[in-house]
Figure 1 (cartoon, rainbow, N blue to C red):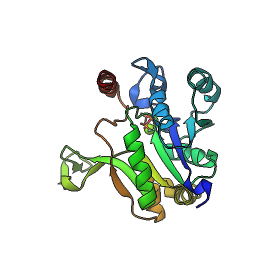
Figure 2 (cartoon, protein in one colour):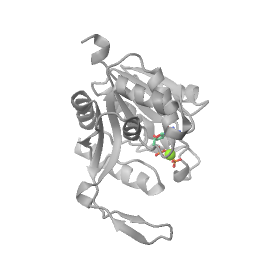
Figure 3 (tube, rainbow, N blue to C red):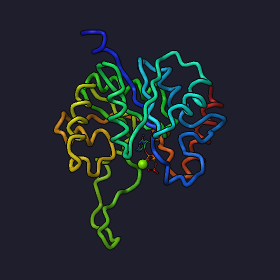
Figure 4 (cartoon, rainbow, N blue to C red):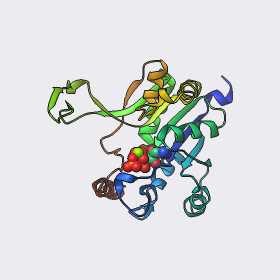
Length: 239
Ligand code: CTP
Ligand code: MG
């Protein structure tokens, strides 16, 4: 196996607008326990076996992020900053194009600051073993499907349901082929919310579920910030 086949790259996404947070500062740059939210993910990947990191930021934000986030830290690994696009999948595609040749790629929402080295490790193992995997957790609530009028249409079998998180990890060639295919035609992009869906639509191999953590939440709405800060604080105390 050549060196680049063994290499693992990570794409950290921070090009979203954070509309559901309703804040002046974009959520990825909000200060959580003294640090910009995006820095938690960068540090976790910096301490992981991943060799290269691509950070995807909003249009026109590259220089500000370099100056305000990256240059204040001393990262041992190469961190390339690129601009994302309108939808999450545009940003992922920009990240895939910016990564240098590698065997595996991990795609992570920068809005999940509670990612750990262990989860990253399990995702890498999953990609090596299954070519395509996502981290997630079994759902705790009962999930119902509602009809157009807001009445319960059916109840899904909870034992089979997982809430999906990131990282989502793939053999690079597989992810690249699936994304190349989806980017060719807009009709293929409808309703795509994660990377596993892209692989599924493309007709790739089965995507394996890997255990994440209930703590690995995505900071989406204001109450998520309260929970994330509490969990980060508890972690700090445990250290
Ligand atoms: N993301 C991205 N590019 C986009 C949209 C989203 O890089 N065009 C990233 C976000 O920065 C985030 C992750 O994808 O790290 C998950 O997206 P989400 O939680 O939906 O964040 P936002 O899109 O920023 O928030 P909202 O949907 O509330 O606007
Ligand atoms: Mg979004």
